[in-house]
Length: 155
Image 1 (tube, rainbow, N blue to C red):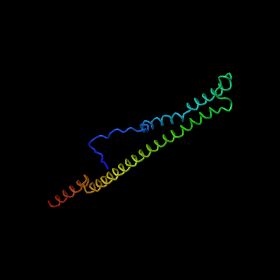
Image 2: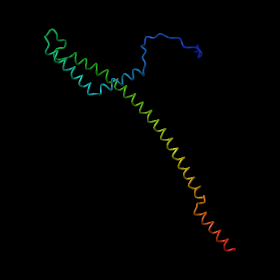
Image 3: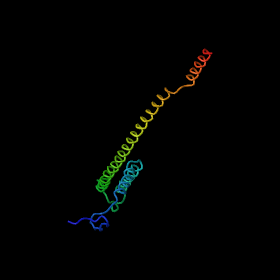
Image 4: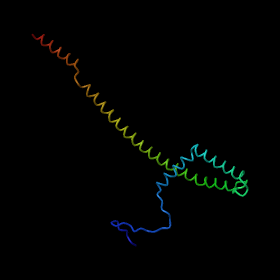
């Protein structure tokens, strides 16, 4: 059993598997999914199918590449759908991951805000109690007036 040394970089291994950046692939899938969900895509796909029909029905016989049952067109649309569905699912998964992270951050922020509100509420309650013990101007005037009256009575 060999142990890996952590103070040295790993040796590069050659593999037969293709290497790809999952983050870049995810961003690409989101861009494609965003395009597939637009009216522009529907218009372009409709134009493509209409041109396909027109070419294979109106062109001279030797230039037609997909006669009437349009089997090749069906194959092309199936291929497009087989790639579109997983790309859309990948984009949705990435969006749900972002939503989950945003929800957790919002929850943590709400907890911090709640703690700050509770702290400020306790501080305000403490200030109210402290103000109840503070002598007010009217109280001082009343006390001074009473002392003045006592002094006058003693004279």
